[in-house]
Length: 420
Ligand code: NAD
Image 1 (cartoon, rainbow, N blue to C red):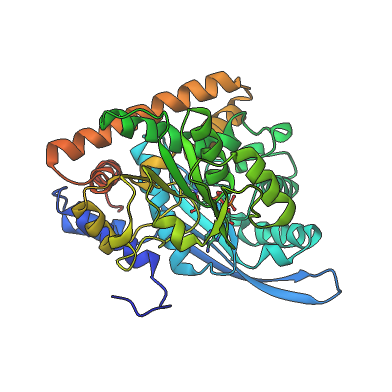
Image 2: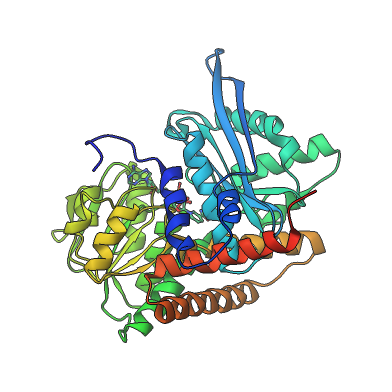
């Protein structure tokens, strides 16, 4: 067990998952070894002019894990804890995720170690443009296509697209996804990950012969993924009993009015109780609440061997990437908790990113209904494929998703062969 406060290395977790899935894949040893390595890694240290006239040096990363099935695809994160191993792990998970939903992308991720909450909009723009310039040799619609992740958003994507386009001398909308609609963003992209989470939750409930009506849901994180998922769960008749942000969480046994609570959070920067039923709790308490569905939708390594024994949810749908460690997984599996793993549950984002890229390349605009209908079809099909592997091989859903994703990438690698 890790000592309290000791950081869990996400890349070690991601590599351990390959070993677990590898036991069910029967692949040549060299192939698994190749997949345990990233293809390309760029570390940049770059100066940014701050509002007070000083210059601050930031460190950023872009990592491509695998491109055997198509261009590298993955978000860019701005967070103080970003480091190379975190970005490597997130890039690897992007590879498996694209393969699980069977879209022709490889996996990548990027990040800058910074605290955007303490930076002005102008400083974030300066940082984004300089970082884009620094990693531009890796980017391109046929090469590597970033998207939003923790603490980045459509505006940041617009600056990346603009900077890359200036370098090229013409507009290149297909270099990023998750852009504003006005710049070639896809309708439905902003909501896609949260929607995908809820589509897979519906499928999990269907499999367990339960309905959404009155189901009690607790969600950690209320950003792009958690916030949208909360609204969608409520729309389908579930009771969202708890929501959190990085500073605190709010709980109501009767169910929260999601829109009101999120509006208040936007106004005050943290959750503020308004009614008698509402109570402030911590992120840790949220994870351990008695609920039907728990949705971790914040950051990695939130469910560990330390708190897993106290998790009371019947179903976990992973909105975040890597929220559960392999040690915690074993405990949750022993408790009979049904897990919809990250590389399946949050794949709605990369799926609609793919739709956005296709629309950009073909200069088409799809309606929101078309996007949602295609997204629903892909998420339902992928859930069914993972569930079938899980049932037929008698393995947990996470291992089944890894078997599907890694198996597809391994087959593409085998077919392409080792050059020369
Ligand atoms: P976001 O920046 O919109 O929101 C992040 C949320 O997490 C915020 O509510 C923030 O307060 C909370 N948070 C941050 N640090 C926390 C901490 N230490 N403890 C508790 N809460 C904390 O980011 P997002 O896009 O919603 O991403 C959330 C997760 O979903 C990440 O793991 C990301 O990699 C994953 N994801 C995002 C997308 C996407 O399309 N945005 C797609 C797939 C996966």
